[in-house]
Length: 51
Image (cartoon, rainbow, N blue to C red; front, side, top):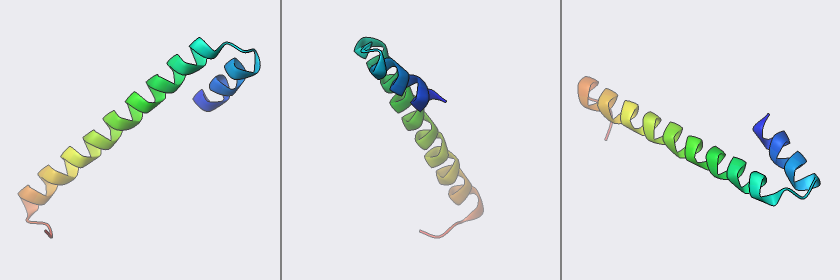
């Protein structure tokens, strides 16, 4: 859905909004990856996962 919104903003030449949407998507992606990393790190410490 967000990628379609970015595409539409580029189509109407609203590059500022497209950049903002893109930055938000990148930020959310990094936050999700960081959360998964923390979950895996804590899970491995608690249950003695592989190194």
